[in-house]
Image (cartoon, rainbow, N blue to C red):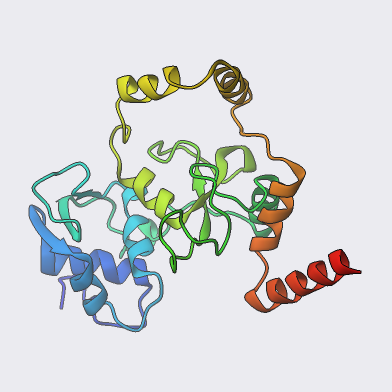
Length: 235
C-alpha cells in the first residue's frame, strides 16, 4: 500500500493510475521492467501498454531498446517519474481529448490508411502473412507536449508505426541513408516524390481510396462486398 493509501492492485482505479503506481512502487526509478511483467501485474484492464505510453506526455520518461540499446526488445527502463497522476489534480495530466467527430474526420481524410507506412485497416503487413494492422490516431509531433487534439495536429497511424514514433528519440534511418535511396530512384519517381514532399501527402488513386475504405469494414461485410463485386464483374 502506498503512502497515499492507493494500491496499484485496486481494480477500481483507472488503468493509467494503476500503471503509474506499479512503476513507482514496484519498478522504481532507474530499473528495467518488461511489458510481460506489466501486463501480468495490471490484470483485468484493457490497453495496458497504451495507458503506460499515456504517461509520457505527463513527464514520465520511459525508455525502450530503440533509444537504450542495452535493453532487450521486450524491456523498458523507468528513467523519470513525471506528474503524480494518482492525485486528483494531476489525473488528466498529459491527456489529450479527441472527439468522436474529429477521430472520424481524420480517418476519412486519410482514407483509413496509415500515413507513415501505407497499410490499411485490418490489412496484413507486407511479407508478414497473418499479421493484422490496427489503425489509431497519432500526433504529427508526438514529442511536442503542446500538441493538441485538433484534426490538423493528428494523422492516421497503424499501431506499429504509432509505437515506433512514440519511442524514437531521433529518426529510424539517418538522413544520409534516406538520401541514398532517393538518389537511386528513376527521374520520374524523383519528380513524383518531390510532389509528395511539397504536398506533405501521398496522393491516392481512386482504387487505393476504395481499398482503404473497404479495409476498415468488419470482416463479414468485406466478404459480402467481395462477393458482390465478383457478381457485378461476371454479370
